[in-house]
Length: 202
Length: 201
Picture (cartoon, each protein chain N blue to C red):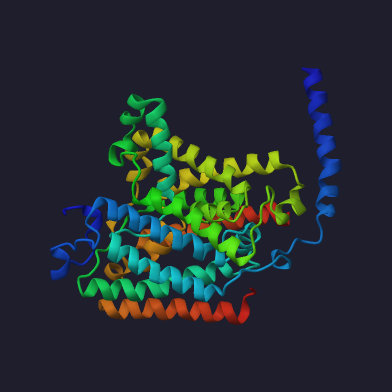
């Protein structure tokens, strides 16, 4: 499968013959999406991140639940994904770094996030737990996605071309062996978690 | 001309008179921590999401993500209403709208959250969140309008940046993707700026 999105930054022998997903059937593929989505929504609700005051509390730097969940997921996910990738069991999915759209889009996303109080994934969890205001946020997300599609032609040839650095990971940027970078990143993030737990609130 | 000037003067006077008063009225600052916390430990939930990422990569060859759902839904609506116009749009040429893995993933997340809330005894069933109404009152219309506009900006931002708090914030960052770390930091800078303007000024 010569999908460029699936090629990792450092091609190993395992990566050259791209991994076939365990579910090859289209129907099985869709079923796996439903099963994993169900678990994702369940976990988000249990983590409290379908709740307006917990998400806005994070943006107000009062409630650190969101940061704790995300950083833990990143550390655990990173350890597993890079191990599985090392043994040729998974493909990496690296998105290209484009400075202008990453920064402008990121800030715009943040502004919208504060106004809604839910992000695209946690809005689904919010609707599931009966926080009906998230439905308006979801409707806005659909409308905004459409607006982007309308503008996608001009955007592709202007803003989205600025600061294009290609598919870039910290493994390419930091001049250290691959595993040293991964272990230090995991260590750094764990340190940040310990600081949060010691000095941050909930 | 004169009438317009006097109208502007009246508006400015009214703003000057009510501005400081309304600022005083919201002291002391609201505290999100006075509301109930999550059901489970964030470390347990975070570990669960991390392990779920292993599974989606291994079983489905997909990173966890949420914003694509909205793009596909908007495209499917567009295809139903204006098929030719939709097909001509650049974004949908790259990503044809259809019921794919990402759509099913977020759809099922609503169900998963519903089961978690109902079995855990914290089903909310409310139209305006408590923290919002403490600050902005309990008008559903105001809450709906702000949430809709916010959602619109958020989707534009996600598409420009190439992902959301799931696709960039978890799946991209855990692969040490440079664009994802830039995007995640910008999400929180933009979000913290506006949230503090909304709740602290």
